[in-house]
Length: 246
Image (cartoon, rainbow, N blue to C red; front, top):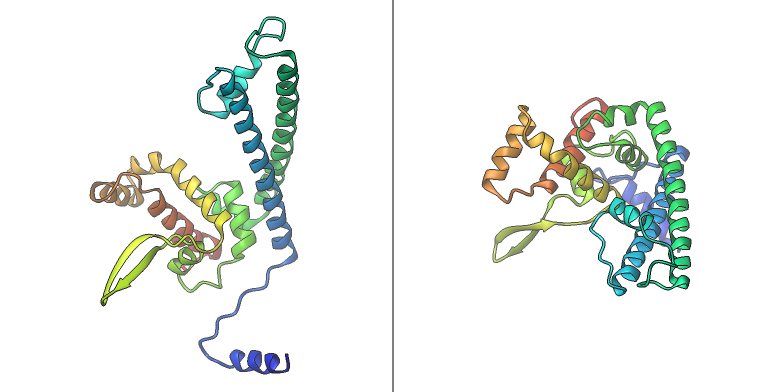
């Protein structure tokens, strides 16, 4: 315990030492709200999966998609006409449906709050102009990254997000495999989902990014979502958040 302050002081004098930027109170609050929303989304997903399992056990297969399940439950006949489900299971499904609606309401309240925060924050507004970066991505990035000055270049941000290839070196030969998946798992998930939604439009656009995507899809697998996520989640995010290319 006595040696620790001296070690910290010695590390602080080293020229290559990198320091973590302290988050503001607003950033910490925003991260907490994102964690709370992510928990509710997980609870809703678990509830939907259980509903599907209950129906499947009784011979009812519902098409994929949350809206399809909603429509199926809304169109279900009453317990007096439905012989595949007993009255008690009908009441259980109604109770689970009410819980589902309550989770939808609470998640929508978080979404509205994030949208208001994005409108009032200049960095978040600039981030939402990037294809694939919406309100959730923008507010989560601002909360986690701040103004981006911690990173010297966009690739450093991509590495921090775990979006860069992992190196496997043996016998002096370096081989690149899948992404490292290090760093902030929640941010990486949001950025990859955003890139997946923007990919069809960007790949068909007459822009430099669209040309890069089309050329990449000819060389490798057509699913280049992670490559696009690395572009939108590093270089363009850094340039938009700081006003310069990081």
